[in-house]
Image (cartoon, rainbow, N blue to C red):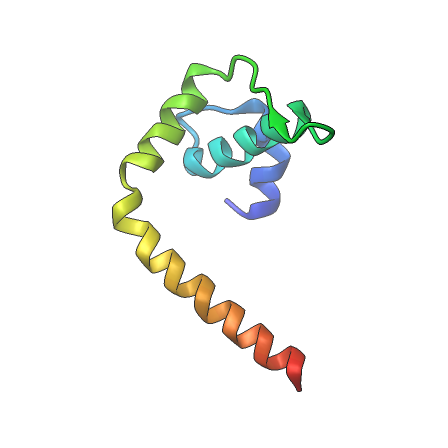
Length: 87
């Protein structure tokens, strides 16, 4: 599933989808974005579907496994782009 497909189908979330974790992340981000109040910097999250909650909890349960690698990649990308911007 391509990122464009994830964005296109995040409103029709299904835990049986091949990339359901990506769909859950985009769906949750959509809820947060559409329910946040920039005036007071608070986020009010209405009832999120149980399927999305479970997928997000599954992702967070494995955070110690994948986040260190992601963090290294973020640092590497930032370093690359900062070097490119200085040139």
